[in-house]
Length: 92
Image 1 (cartoon, rainbow, N blue to C red):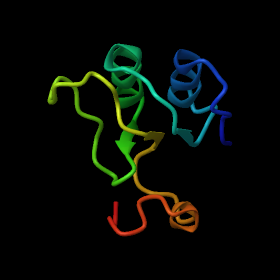
Image 2 (image 1 turned 180 degrees about the horizontal axis):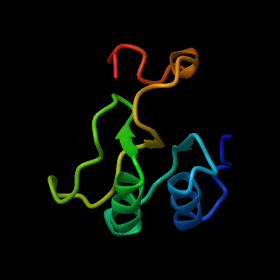
Image 3 (image 1 turned 45 degrees about the horizontal axis):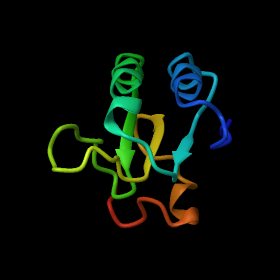
């Protein structure tokens, strides 16, 4: 299932980690402090948080603490994802 971007970030990460959501695109602004702890939960549950190029979200690597747009999903890439223009050229 896909979650609406209107869901609270912590609820979204929690549901994905529990297996209650397959995919969450976050295409609006967030800060590193909004996502870091939940990112760790998703990783421990076997999921991933990647930018739109398929690279893992990085923390404390740039001057700004704003995150790029990102996706929360299980490991691998759903075969339908390129249909939406996401991760199409990465082979992730």
